[in-house]
Image (cartoon, rainbow, N blue to C red):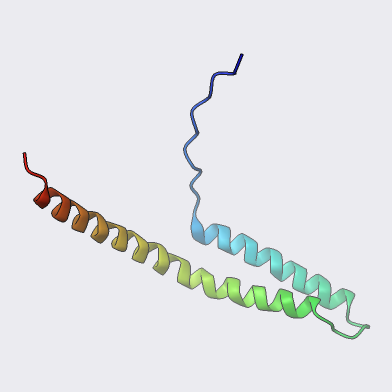
Length: 92
């Protein structure tokens, strides 16, 4: 006998800038740890990867709100176009 299926829960929502800031802060900590740990040794790839991701995270802190706003505008325009085109072609 099969189990009754539970309804799918709604997706979790969060502040995009906060999530990006927390991840960026984590890579800042990783960069500091790698630089301190590898200071006497030659730098290989670890600090450079952490530095690159840190730079991307800082860049995304400013880009994410713009992308979210642009996406909302684009979805609104697409919905409007669909309503106008589909609504005009459907006869009562």
